[in-house]
Image (cartoon, rainbow, N blue to C red):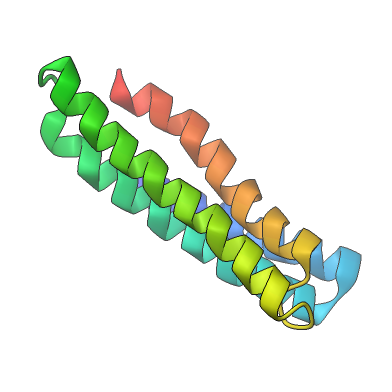
Length: 114
């Protein structure tokens, strides 16, 4: 979990920096906020999976599905934030922050599950 937290923090900083270079300060803030949201969601999803490592497949899939549900709620949060307040949450920067952190961590999660 510590490696995930460190990697997620680094990715969040990288996405915020990229957004700042591309679109400015407000975009960097939005990318940073949603990068942190993605990191929190990923850590919560991994915490759901830890107790069922090696458990029967049905139990494992239930917890895995709950983690995917959390990730879907993150996407809904992007749509709500960008739809309700485009000034503070520009859609591209917000999505960059969320997906730029979540997707690499999701690929790394596959290595942890084995």
